[in-house]
Amino acid sequence: RIFIAIDPYGNIEYDRGDGDIGSQLNFPGYTNQMRKLAIPFLTLYGLQRLTHFIFFNLEDTEFFARYSDGIPVYSKSGKNIINLYSFVYFDGPHDYETVRKEVEFFNTRTHKGSIYVFDDVEGYYNHKRIEENLLLKNGWEIFQVSPQKISYKKVMI
Image 1 (cartoon, one colour):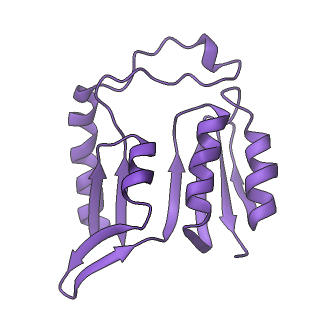
Image 2: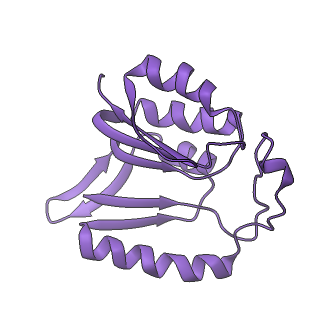
């Protein structure tokens, strides 16, 4: 299995979203220092539990443009292009339009049984619109719910 992470870090200002909570936050952004602390732990997790860990120090839009046809992964059998995702964790940006674009990108690149987890769903953006227009109508069903997170499982293709 392959574990990928996509995050720009680099002192980019944090997107506070277009909802009530987001507009009240004062968060400077994810710094390169935060990247230095996070990536070793993610790498270790990937090495201990999975076959591959790949970190893309990119914004989501850059990743979508560069890897729309898939990610090259090299193994004993040679180069393979991975273009189906089994698990996607959405953790920012927190505005409706960006989350919509992210979901549309991954919806065509998932399979039956794939899982989506959305973080910060209360008060940051209108998640119900995402759920009703892009998930439930496209073969996803609610899997688990907590106060700030909600997950979905793809049950139809």
